[in-house]
Image 1 (spheres, rainbow, N blue to C red):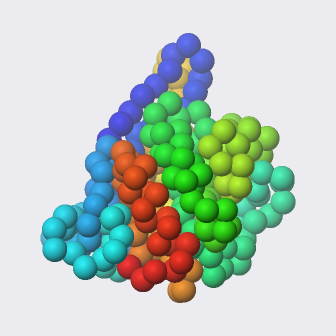
Image 2 (cartoon, rainbow, N blue to C red):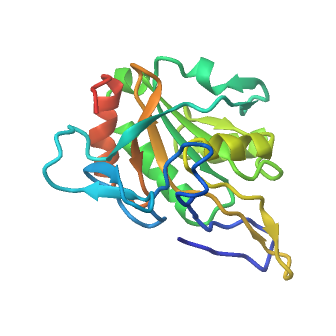
Length: 236
């Protein structure tokens, strides 16, 4: 997990954390491995609920971690960067979708992850790019206004979808996928700590369920390889 704070100006920072197996019992979700680990091969589940990576012998054509249990897209409606309501399930139905929870003031994992996805998307043919939705959900809606979010996302992908709004809705949506999002904390020195999971989840277009996950530090080459498969709806 990574955690950073700023004392010069109140800015959020990242402390990536995960839900344990006990906390996931009600939601029926999975616990995911920690921030800073790359992912490859097929993923199962250890006894404690954390993801088990099988780097050899997997039959999947994907290089990301294949989830043994598939998860529905969250039932989530927030404002997009134009200020209009965006129903995640309805608007991305039948489309390969990458979903990431983070915030624009993040100094580390959020810009690097979204930047890497942006580079990978730029390597795809235009027709393939049209078949993939990249959705960034803000975990810091008080600071991530639609304008702030759009400006930030444009530096990585002008077609990327940014959503911001009710933090309780965001937390519930993330929890349904085994991703922990916490309320931003204002520290005694005036700095702000924002905690969120660092996983990118990939939903296949055939059933609109999450079949793959990518941890922070996943190489651009992995995204490039897998996005081409996702665009074609290749089974995991």
